[in-house]
Image (cartoon, rainbow, N blue to C red; front, side, top):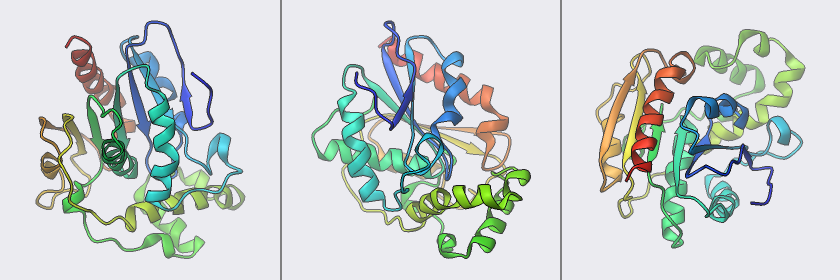
Length: 249
């Protein structure tokens, strides 16, 4: 397979299934770097690196979901040597969900499984506050409240000046999202949710079942919105169990 700046992966001859991973707002592919060692060797962790962060920091971030799908879908479609699954956390789950719909719409292979983590079900999303329109100072304070960015990073103005455009673009994707009804997906969906996250309104978690004709299972983890860090081992155990079961089908 040709190399591309969109993907961080470790190819190997014994891979039999590929998991494309999409990070939360402002995150990057290297958040998933150590996942490979925690899953079955037959599973390839393929982390998606969006423009405007890490190794692609010099590129303009993409703040439109349709534009992002048009850019990333051909990259995923070209990786057609293995069946695949999708994982996304927060806005990454929203991107993964709409990517699956986009690929199906264009007659391309569908995922074998989908992991929707830390993200309200599309039909039950809470009203947005358009936080991406705030000034840099106010937006930084919002990020402090989310507790997803280390305080020492938030205190570094020069560093934040580099990071804010990508974070703001990801927030814009989530806050400008408008759900449209469409045919059900066929892949089973695993929903991961934090017990202390803001997901207690009706449908925000179990509403993902409305998006697939397959099974939908909800797993709860201790922690808030960023439970995938504090509960990393438990999250990976669940992912590995689901995907190794797919390998045996």
